[in-house]
Length: 523
Image: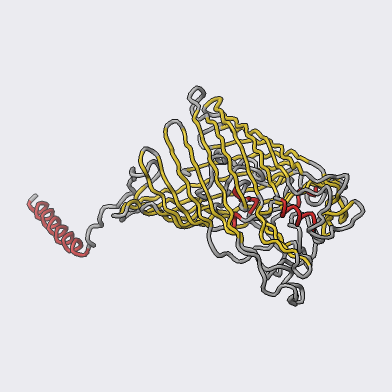
């Protein structure tokens, strides 16, 4: 027994010595793991970036889109090649998949909240071999200032949620891609704010057309009157926005806005510089300079727009139901009276049917000279205005329907009409195919004024939270003012279903529809 006791004590002593030796070799105990903490300063979905006082929210969405007899995003076939309405250009079905990720990063500073926000992704559309990059937002905000890519501060309320309605003739919208801005917003209290912004003018450019008599006149679908194989002034390649010179000044935009429990209202204004190139065709295929006008150019002309809009919540209906009304009047700034997402890319509207065409051009200004410049017009600004409205009603928290309509009118003054209808380079012809002779003798029956209007409805169902299933149906129409008994339009460059020829002017409309499924997560 004494022997057993001695053995046990000896073993225990050995273990203690061994444990002490090994303990001396162990590393220092690790610090407790720092778990992600919820950041409640800015609402749901934010958390602290570990080790910092900066909060971040990750969001985005995935969308599947099916367009019927329209371009994707419900771009009706009254613009671009789809208006040709033939078996080659006009898809009866188009598909698009798009996904977007967003990051909203915020930090409290001595100057207020420092915020940076990005939203971008990829999309693949029918006709594209590979997916392409898609960007929507990328801006910084601090102390009331906004720098970068965001929604125009002129934009009103007619976007009506996640879906843009009536892309070719909506209220003033800079579109999903927004625009580049340098802006300051002052909060005046009680939900009232005042913003002054300098915005990139490129997306707000309508057409500028030089009617000078040494320019070619091949009219191509989707393009402005004037050069087709090469452009006016210094632009060697054809462009769809005409004879614009290089950007000199941004658009100056201001708005006064109120957001309260009853809804929202806004008045807005914009100044827009129309800066044209030179009189005449100054760049040709051989880079030769015409003798007529090597340095002469029309004076710059400032246009602008003024508008107002209101969104009124409808308390007598289900929560979320609202009424929208918006209007804009513009001169020399037509992209503020129509959707800039279309206008910045293309200023020409057209729809063909056999030997007829409904054609119209959203031109901001026209200028030109004839012969030895005995008859010269500087920039003549055109006028455009729009009135639109809509109502969105929630039948249940999961089902809502919108009804909307827009009416847009473009007007050319007397001098602009004389150039459009009198220039030998005009697309307007007599029924026999003769071109106009001069500004002083415009063709009878020629009137470039036009109206675009549309009506539509959209229903969205949310079968589960954050999943939208929406169907939109829309009718769009071009009403032009050319007299088909007296004049025809010369599509010598590329025409409609009937090929390159003279087309009889006519009023035309088209139906379009789009089905969207969208999964949203922390927008």
